[in-house]
Amino acid sequence: MQWKVFEPAVTPEMVRLIRLAEEENRPHPVLEAGRNGNPKIRAYLGEEAFRAASQFSADCSINPEQSAVLHRAAEVLPSGLFTALVAICGMRMGFETAEKELGWPTRSAKLVLAMALAELNRREVV
Image (cartoon, rainbow, N blue to C red; front, side, top):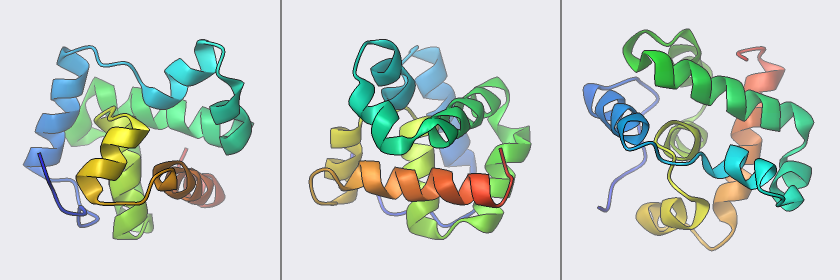
């Protein structure tokens, strides 16, 4: 599936893909790496960003249409950062999969996600 960068808005298609990740019980790329002894992800992102990823994902998985965090993220993040956040923390795409789908260079998803999570923290979204 090749797709474009999301415009910063919560769409029915986005909600469907977030729900699908939950229904399929996909592992969360950030949280699973931190739990399974891969401290590099947690160290790279930092504790505040790791916590933000957890809160964002939990809020989205309950009811994506009415997720205050998801809607607020759409308001405050530029489209590239919003896309990385939703793809990795909402749809639970792996980092490599997100990079391939979005046509991004290798290892860029971690950097873009780190910037998105830092911005969410700075704006006190999570």
